Length: 186
Image 1 (tube, rainbow, N blue to C red):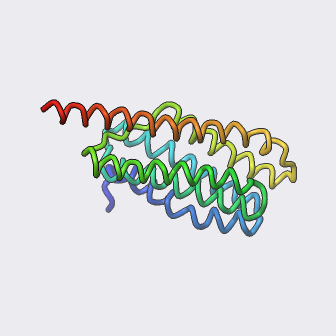
Image 2 (image 1 turned 135 degrees about the vertical axis):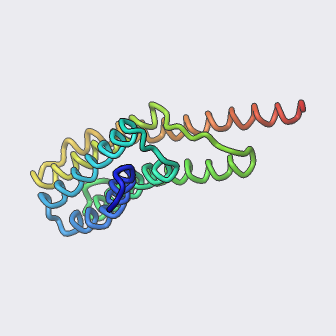
């Protein structure tokens, strides 16, 4: 029997595995199925975090897998919605570029400076919220054959994506410079 303390990680892994079926459903243009799968995946994100915090079942594995599952789900949905021409290529490239910037920046920081304490910023969380909102809006728009709300949300998502990406670069740059100055003094 699976121990309950592993439930948050199981939900996270399930969300990670749902990225493929969500993309397939988007590309198959099955709006009800797509909405159901994506909504389930989004709710599992909220649920795994709540359970982990409420019962003290946080783990290093969960801390690594949770943002990875979010990114895989978001990027696969963005790519699929771009392929069916609901979300423009430029916005998908911007979202993917930010993620690449953050991931490569964290590796460089760790290599050059040392251990990184990665905490998502409020701006980063808002960015993810708006990206999720855009995807949900896009999925609903496909179902209703009405894409105006998607076009309205696109610049908002772009601004939050750029803003949060720049915030991470500035924050890590400052931490790196402080650490370098401290090392030079020692």
